[in-house]
Image (cartoon, rainbow, N blue to C red; front, side, top):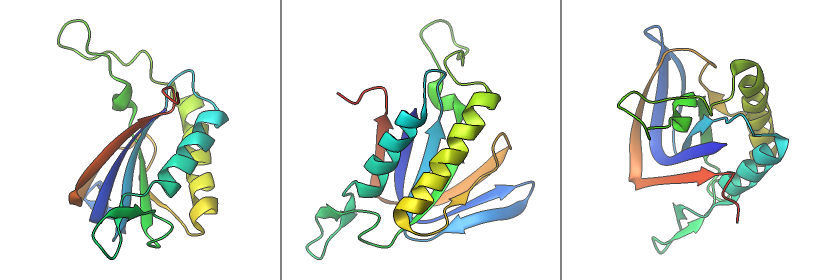
Length: 150
């Protein structure tokens, strides 16, 4: 499971020309589920993301977590994070999980994040064509792959 975290001042998501969700200070999480992922990967990423100290403290140092700053989360599924570009110019998505596997793990990830931060997470719609606008704060962008724990 791959997560791309972007620390944002604001973020909004549009589906079919209508705003679907938005957040202010917090994290946009683009989440890609791979065929070999399980609930273990979900739990690993939830803990990492909610406890990662990437928000500024009073001295301007990245020393506070999402929970510490009472930040919001927007979680968006993105199978293209598992693109293989080794051969040719057209990406292959053979490692990405099929929707029947990916959607339940994506939904579990959302539920576990909500339990961890104590508030509702904003989301996209699994499989929808979405337009995302954001103001990246920093910019701070971090990639976490649950298959690279060690």
